[in-house]
Length: 162
Picture 1 (tube, helix red, strand yellow):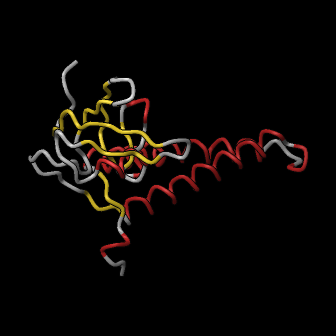
Picture 2 (cartoon, one colour):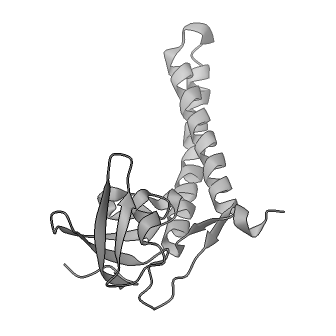
């Protein structure tokens, strides 16, 4: 049995997203098996590019399913509180003090990170720096290339309206 520290915190939405990907892969699996069987029926497997590709695709699908099932096995859904403290699942608006740019990120578990969608992981340099801090705090972010300061402008349970 895993100890509490062995679990990976994740938002409820992130957990659901993994469940949806598993369902999609499981739905696609019979089709991949059918393609493999058709390619195998074409004869000589040593020079059968379709067979090799189908086998690789099925292996990739099976590997991804194993990975995602492990992700869920060790995931622990975290429900953030309604206070102004930065924690997993909350949206944080930050002002970069060097150029006064403002940006908003959701702090998420490692499996959910997607900067294009405005989601940064709690273990990223930025995530580590802001976790546990409150609106109005100024924190130093220690990134690989340089350190910089950000001020927490807002912390909320939902994404701010554009």
